[in-house]
Length: 108
Figure 1 (cartoon, helix red, strand yellow):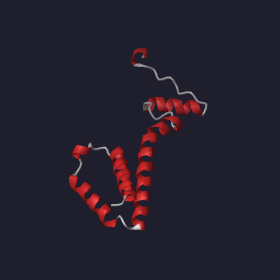
Figure 2: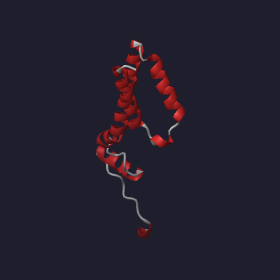
Figure 3: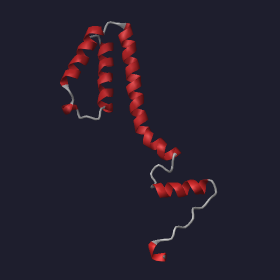
Figure 4: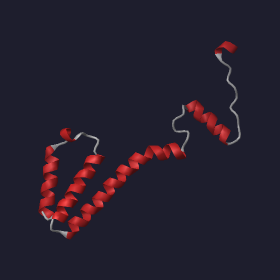
């Protein structure tokens, strides 16, 4: 492979490593072998390079989205980590209402 395609291959392998939830030792070796042979067979094609760049962009964007997903949920949905009762009370306060006080067992 030429150095341009070798760099592209290495970038793709690194991105897959960063995005993977399975440790490298536990991954299926057949997939790596097929991936390497696919790259070796088609490394001369400009369309193949274009597709690999798109795959790199997609995998990187997905990884970034997953990492930011919890941050965005916490920022734009502050009720996400509350219990159902706390969420109902917060929603009621948001529209200017207060929840009625529920008597406890000791008050009866």
